[in-house]
Image: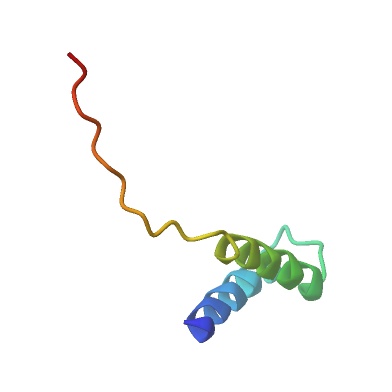
Length: 57
């Protein structure tokens, strides 16, 4: 899983780096994208299923 995430992050970073409008170094782009992935995967996982709401009379 980690290899797949890192591969996706580096692919996105490379696309950003080689785009014509880019003015940032590769390292800054990579750091920003890794931080976003880290933030996403650091969130707590809710393992409790959502209960359907019952109709109120």
